[in-house]
Each structure stands twice: as structure tokens, then as C-alpha cells.
Length: 464
Image 1 (spheres, rainbow, N blue to C red):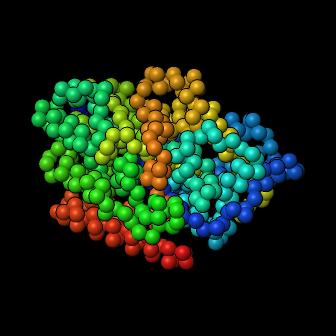
Image 2 (image 1 turned 90 degrees about the horizontal axis):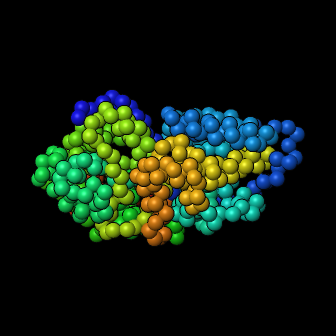
Image 3 (image 1 turned 90 degrees about the vertical axis):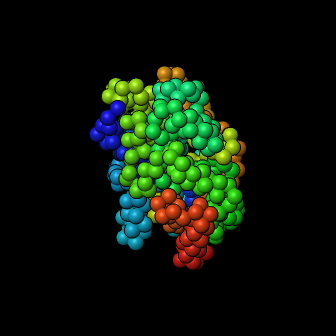
């Protein structure tokens, strides 16, 4: 099969939105005393306009705008001014700049890696304050979705457009290699075994296409039950050291290195905007790859056009060192700005409640073609979502993956101040190993030292 520009355009856009998948915070005492004026809308003299900064793009933005229109029709006291900041990084940087110049939204959609910095900024109203003031029931939410954004026993933001990485594979190449196309590998060892059978059978030149993305490393650690940083993954106390260089971490990095060195996996590089792992799946060079769940809907839509011949999509949970395990959430959550009026804070909370309702969560998941994972347990009763999952059962895999497995400090996810600095250390470590010929032991030790250095430098900057 030939590579196609449409595949690139659609999947590249989705992957850009998921380039970040890990976590955030270790306490700053900013919010337990904060209040949330949930009844302030009743005192407003007219419609309250709130500004909402977001980073929802492409087809998903249409779904998002539809949800906002539904909300405004249901709640005439509130007008929502949507401003698309295009990327999470641009949104966050503009928010931080706004702490100085006063140009801030009333509600913002932030990616999960920003939690510690937002807590340290003391610039938001903890969602927990609104939950308490409104006696809002959280029992229907997926525990790990809430736990990720809980710092010092305080829910800081509301998870909303949630995702997690999965294994995507070509069912027909599995069948050609004599593998059961309905049973994907559950462990990294099984990925190696499957890849060997695929290559030896001639079904494909490579079993796996491996793109070095630090968030994949984070999820492999979490799914394998390994904490990423010290102090209970930064949840018992602020993280001060990386724990990359653990026995399990070495096993993961050694697996990655040996897969590439043995010719069972194609190394597609470490550039964030590189989508050669998706090319490899599309053109039959590889039978499997790791990718964020946000790619599932667009990928299926492209494949349904028939442009890729016999490429039949299969999806499995992210493999790990052992079967089972659990994953944290990735992608976005909703934050309420502190430096705004009580009426606007109340309006922002009303919008958060609307977007978090099971009906709207199902609508978002359906509209994104399974790209976003519902955060409410009761969505399994939604007939429209159940119909989609019955028609395309692979779209349920990310939901089941987030719902299943143990909830521990490892599977909830890590809280780190300079999250990007840690990711840079991981990316550079993989490059040293895969391109520079450094051993997994040395590459991992160097990555840990670099990650610890940036963690501690951030803590010093904020006086922690």
C-alpha cells in the first residue's frame, strides 16, 4: 500500500494534540482557603460573559462548539466567548504571561503536565471548592481521572477531554503471520514474540514501528506499576528526584533498544512532528505501533475510505512488563481563574458541570469518534455511545483501559514541576541509546541525572 497525504494530515493533527501524556503537582497551599461563589449568578443584573481559552482543533472543535451552543441554549444567563489558542503550549504560555499583564480567561483547558506549575502559581480556584460549595456528587467519575488532578487532597481542575495511549495494529498482517488478529499482545515480551513471527513469516519487514515520545515512556512505567519520581510519584510530597533508573525502567529501555537493534522494530526517530510510525503502519512496513487514543477515530475514518487496501485496524491496551496494570489520564482538564469576578467564577463552574455530565461526555466521545475517553462510569448506559462501541468495539479500548487495573501512585501518574524538562531528558536519553550507541544502562542513568537536575532547579526557582 502507498502512503497517502490524507493519512498524514489527519493523523498528524490528532497526534499533535496528544504529544503530551503524563502528570503534575506537589502542593503549594494555594487553595484550601479559596471559596467558590456558586450562587453568584443569581445576583447578576444581566447575562454573564465568560472567556474560555481552549486548544481543541480540527473536527473536534466543531463538536466542542456544538456543546457550547447547547449550553448557552440551556443557560441563557451565560454567554461563552471561545478563544482557540491552537496548542496547549501556546495556551499555557499565554496564561502565564497573563499573570503579569492581566489578560486572563475565566476558564481554561490545560494539558495534564501543567498541574504543578498551576498549583504553584496560585492563580486558580480549586474545583474542589466548587464541588464542596455546590454539594456536587463525584461518585460517578472514574477514580483515576479525578485522582490525577488531586493535590493535597484537593481536586484542582476537572478532567474533561481525556485520552491514553494504545497499541494499534494491522489485523490482516497478524493473520498473514499466523497470529490471531483478535488477540493483540498484552506484554512487551509478547510484542517481541509477535514481531519475531511477523518478520520471520515475511508478513511485514518490521513487527513494530517505534516513535520516541516521552509520554509513551511515562505510560509504560505507569502500566508496569513503576513510579516516575520520588515521594510517591510527587503525591506524598513534592518530587525532588527522578526514578527513571529503576530495574523496571532498565527493562523497558533494554526492550526498546533490543527491538530496534535486532531488526524487529523500526526506529522512526524522536522528533515530535514525526509521524513515520503511522506511515509504517499505513504502508505495511510494520504491523504494530503505539499511539494516543485520539488517533483512533480519524484513522478509522481514513481507512474506511478504502484507500489503504487490506489494512484492517486493530486496537489493544498498551502492553507493559506484566499483564494488567492501569494507566493515568492524558490530555486536558478545565481550570477556573481566581482573578475574575464571582459571577464569572459561578458561570465557569456551571459550564464545567454541563461539560462533565454523562450525556455531554458521551456526546464528546461520539463526536470525536472515540478519540476522547468518557470520564463518567454511567456512560456505559448511553444508548448512542453503546451503539458506536458495538459498531466499532476498538473505540471502547481506551475507556476500559482507564477504568480497569489498580489505582496506585504509579497508575494515577506523576506530579512534576518542570515536566517538559524531564521529557527532554527522556527524549535525549533514547537518542543516545538508539542513535549514539550508548548502552541502555548508561543512557538511563544519564537521563535520570538530567531529569533530577531540572526537577530540583524548578523547585529552587519557586522556593520549594
